[in-house]
Image 1 (cartoon, one colour):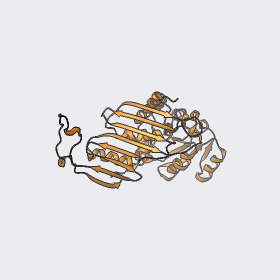
Image 2 (image 1 turned 90 degrees about the vertical axis):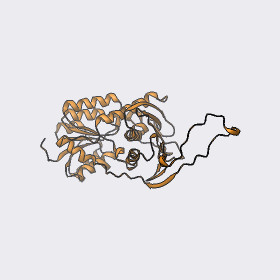
Image 3 (image 1 turned 135 degrees about the vertical axis):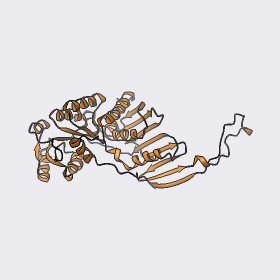
Image 4 (image 1 turned 180 degrees about the vertical axis):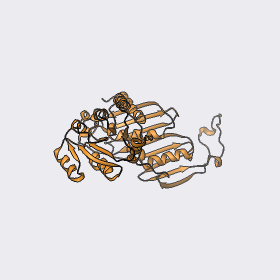
Amino acid sequence: MAKGKVVRTLIVGLGRIGWDHHIKKVAENPRFEVTAVVDTIAARRKEAQQVYGCRTFATLKDALKADVAQLAVICTRSVDHCAHTIEALRAGCHVLVEKPAAMSVREMDRMMAAAKKARRVLTVNQSARKADDLRFIRETIDSKLLGKVFWIRLASQSFFRRNDWQQLKRFGGGYLNNNGVHAVDGILRLLDGPVESVWGDLKHTVTAGDADDFLKVVIRGKDGRLLEVEQSYACAFPEPKWLVCGTYGSMRITGEEATIKYFDPKKAPKIKVDPKAPADRQYGNDDRLPWKEKAVPAKPKKAYPDLYDNLYKAVRRGTKLLVTPESVRETIGVLDAVRKSSLWK
């Protein structure tokens, strides 16, 4: 394909994420053009044709046969992502697929193999990577302000008796596949090496349907850092979203504000262990640390690149993807491990 030309784009699935996000992002970016959409619901197809003046199709097969696009954006139900991605790749399209990219590492490997064989770009909308709080934590870790960060906890809790298709196993629903994949993919950016081990548990508690609505994930990196993700639709007392603990202090983030309590180790008194029996059987000491505390916006210094701008450069110029399929494979591998270790099936 010639460099510099707009990328003709097919939006596959006009649900919330396809209609409210992707088709708008494509339409507003001059490097892309919405040439066609696919949806099983006739009213949605009519609306897309009226708003964007594009062609419409009831099936992906018909759209690909018509050769209407160079890029397919897959926004169908989670359980269909693998099949639709491979179908589009085999037809010669580059693919941006919504999260979760796949239901398993096995599916992800099939998708990656299809992209390699077709010599096409494959990427995933792992949008949590651009979150301000996540990138602020990454910058704080790198600054060494908290010393050696050894434990990070991410919590998302509410009491919500959800009852849409995302609570049905047969559609690939559940907290882990929906919000959990964002949390896991994001928190993995805070490791300084590969994953060493994973433990997790899933439960179905208060929502309708049969999919998980509670998850606990514990990840240990080869760098020794411990990551925890806890998400629930059955907790009436939400906790702070982030807790970050290091050898020189801690940080918590609630909303858009970070509270940091830390000390300068150079100004801290020396301390050593006393092996003798404590006087009067009393434990403790008179250690006085030079604590400092501040509340600051949880905003990173660096801006995050636009996903579609990056995708255009990858398609037209062969530049490196912002979200590589290899990095997403690691995330899907963690989800696989959580399902395997959970007692709830």
